[in-house]
Length: 258
Image (cartoon, rainbow, N blue to C red; front, side, top):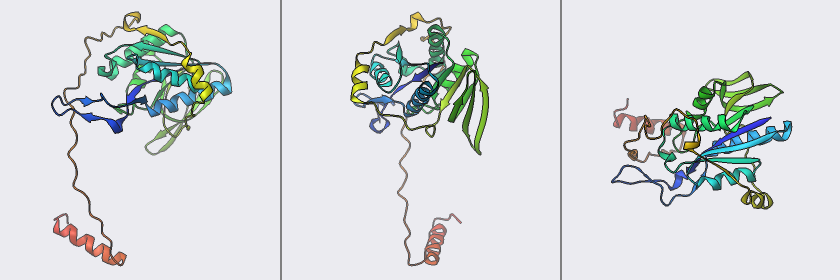
């Protein structure tokens, strides 16, 4: 079985700031990391490889900074990694990213299962995975919480608003992984050292047969703003539940909420 995992390197959201003049994120001092749901996706692929055999390929679109993330993927079980090197990738919309990733996947070969995180932890759009599946003309199952695979089929349990759904699907398929599917493993010192020696295959946008032109991105972010801070709430702590309820009701009356 051949597995491919799409990896996105994101900015640590706890370190993000917004430039008041430009209205854009200032990530100059923020650390970069693999999007957490992508780690779940990678772990799912590695577990299937360990149980059924095969190979796991990690694929990322971004600047050369993403090489570090791809080597981290190798340190926790990926067999090889590929980078679509493009310095302006952070400004691409989901459609453009999906087009370039799917073009690279077609070039790399046939895969039985393709994995993405259910969404990236920076933009939280959740669109790239389904759009890759559409461009590859294969089925996709989102929000996967469990995967059971046989030779040419998979049974995937996915999270839904009203519970869980069990979906039977033939391969190839694209799966977006939820964070409940597994607990990603940690690299060992030995595996990190081996990953540091690994060679990452580099592709460029010009290498890909894609109808999408990166100079004509249809969606552009004009400005980003921080939501206004909310006033601090109040805490009611009375001698009894009855007194608490009375005090709460009185405050709601004063605020003309009832």
